[in-house]
Length: 256
Image: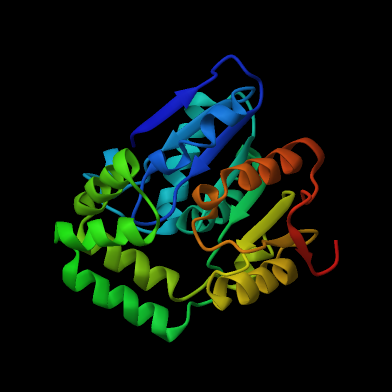
């Protein structure tokens, strides 16, 4: 599995786990903001530099990340995931708890997505290998120049089989029995303008399933809010790492 590594000499490790349809490059605005940490940024199997590796499951991807942490980290890591990366982060905390210090889950799809979202995902696969499709999608996300080209190149490199397997797994949601096995401090944050299955149903499932977890929304934000509002995302992550608290600018959901 391909990865980038920064700040090897620092004692605390952050591992950033990317979402679907992208790769580790999506954390380009986060890595320099946390240069006081040892940082690992993998491309998950089937994505980016690891697209030659078959995607098997969220659990198998978590095992790959565990191997990376065992090899490169000096102790348990702060695990930051967005969307698909959040699912991998949860599995990592369940399957390899001694490797995980905290979880920061952004845009986690823990509840089953809406039927219309699954349908849209299946329709997207009809155009998967067309460059124009990825160019239009990049434009809709507000990406430009180098970021847009990275997005298009990454998307074209993802096998349709990988996308289909991920969708089939994510649409089932994550069961409460799995969430209840997470034993590390956890903060989940969704964009307030994300799909209701993420911004409401998934946050509720995390809050009820992971004991002691904190949940919040980022006002005005959508799914890819680490890029949409870099300053807010980085401030939220910094507040979590330093104080295990919800940052100003976020709105708490449920009891703290």
